[in-house]
Image (cartoon, rainbow, N blue to C red; front, side, top):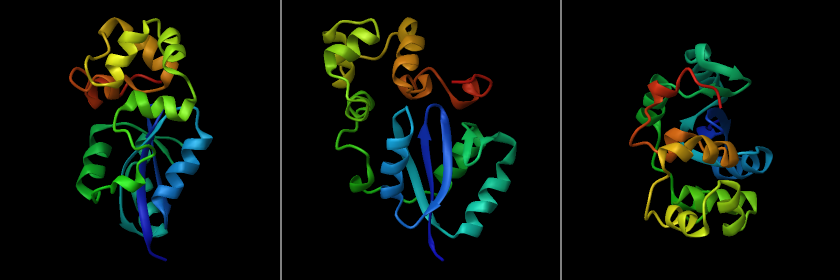
Length: 166
């Protein structure tokens, strides 16, 4: 049966699976995981295709359908995905901090306090007015589950993160 192979990032790992409705699957996974989920994309495929992808990346499998983030895996996903329509995004917002708060239920003030910053700093992050300072990355990653390579892609690459666990 034809559907889609999807790639969802959560907690520094990527889930590769099969679904006829990737947007519905994203919402289900997001409700089951403690970290924000990002739909990296999907492409047409079958269950057999899904198993082939799992076999291709078996060396970076962590558990079940979850895989470590590696450059070859990200390149494979980028080479195969079709553009993700806006309707398949978990939230209307493209800002990772706004999406995290929507999923976690944190108010802005509580999120800022949990990360050890003032509310204005959090607001700046949510409005793309400033980036997370390097010295805060560990704390923000621990509180939100958002990988540091997503928080600061300008300084972290997949290869620099391969040997670290979330």
